[in-house]
Image 1: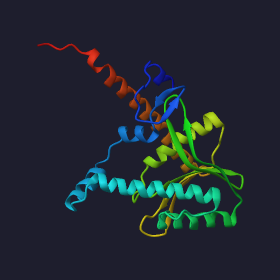
Image 2 (image 1 turned 180 degrees about the vertical axis):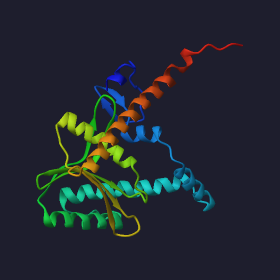
Image 3 (image 1 turned 90 degrees about the horizontal axis):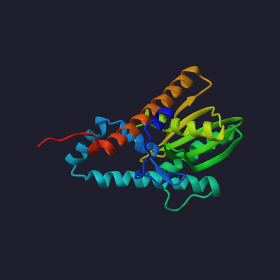
Amino acid sequence: FKDIDDLEFKLSEANSNYTFNGVKVPRVTEIISKMIHEDSLLYWANGLGFKHTRYSDEMKKYTTIGSAAHKAIEIFLKKGIIPQDAPYNPITAFISWWNRIISNNKVTVIGQEVPLVCQYYGGTYDLLIRVNDDYWLIDFKTSNHITYKYFLQLAAYNQLLRDKDHMNLRGVLVLQLDKTRPIYHEYYLDFARPESRDYFNNCERTFMSLLYGYYNIKYLEKEYSHAYYKTS
């Protein structure tokens, strides 16, 4: 983090509810979305236009499903009940996955929906479990398309778990829960495999590069009006 400290700049108006020592810090997802842009989102949005569907309405629908699924999973794991308003397909898919995991392993829930924060960024992980003697960090997604950016997000959380809580993970898992069918797909990195460990190490380095770039951009935006001279 030394290079960021050299900027001598701290965010005061981050689009975030995370604070460190009373100062707002950006969300992990904000950093990634600002620093990485993909044309596929534009194509999807344009496609909605041809269908006479408002982009904001569609995004709100999918966000609502995702939020409801996260809340239902949290209640199910804590209380063993399924909320009446839980989205059927994602929660059914999760329960199928969960029953498979606990049927052959000793599983302990270490944390659910736990916020993590440092002086540069913050975020909330979905689920941290111990499977037998190994720790796994789980991220739930109801999106149709799983991308590498989700592993960047997990890499940011892992760095805080390791540096602040001295937690050493066995691996990370993106669990995709289908919105239209009660099925799931696993996308995981098992750090016992060298190729998975190398890829995740690269995810951590990449996120740190994005973080440094994010703060540089914010610094340039803040100092822009004071740095140039304008002639008439």
